[in-house]
Length: 423
Image (cartoon, rainbow, N blue to C red; front, side):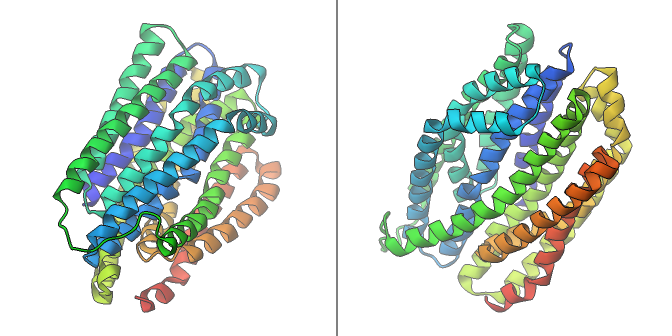
């Protein structure tokens, strides 16, 4: 199951890399910086509300493992309802969100101008993105990894093709990248809903009924998603602070870090594939109350995750300079990115444990521990950043990110036995 999920996940940072490459071959570094800031805002929002995926897979897998297919259906409907409500609220708040972001980020005038253009177009894709999160999370809980792969292939494939068309074919520049994202996100949602309808029609009728607005289940969903939102707020805040601090260093360091940020995205989304697989496989074991199956599945997931993390680091070591060259044709940006390449090369080995443990804890729906360990890691990130960046500049910024990722994995490992005993 993990292989299709990894392929699906890798398509997401591939899209970001292509968008960086598209604007990276325009004549000025501030085009890259503008897309970096605009994409960072959406990454913040999308990751923050990725609870719609993360909080759906585990409960769906548990309900499926228990044979409660009425609840399986109800979970999907609740997740879509929540996605629609959040999407409407975010659209209503788009101007305050944008103004707050521009106030917090100290970018150049050119970067801010094009980042605003990018945001005000792409923001209308939010309801589609959140709805797709709910659909994919539910499908993962059903142990269906191939359909999400197709959904993301349609979304990201059309996005890449349209970005190339709008920027190079029609000369739309940065707004062209945003329009491509807007169109492709709705295309992906339509495909996802059609696939879900087909899956629902094939589910067995277990004779049970589960109310959409069941108070206990809604409170459980809100509690799980609330913990995940707080956990994810810390995660996306690290990425946001990373880009904001990069902008303070100047347009060239910002452009270089945006190029290297694509390495981090490939790492995180690739390793997250094992977390998603763990949620589905281990969540089903939790639903059956099968502790031995849970332990066995966890060992297998960690074995493969560690291997892939090591191969990921080796790939960056061998091909890193070539990847940088593909992402930008500006010599100064290439040189600046190459100087810090060894940081994203180390990240897969450091981060693999945090990403994989996330899947274990989500499978068991032990989201409170996840929340607390991430908050502690985030505080450590801020402390390291405060002392290391003034002393070491960009290297200190990267060191703070490495501290955050490494400490997350360590803390989750320390609490693992408490989770296993509760099954």
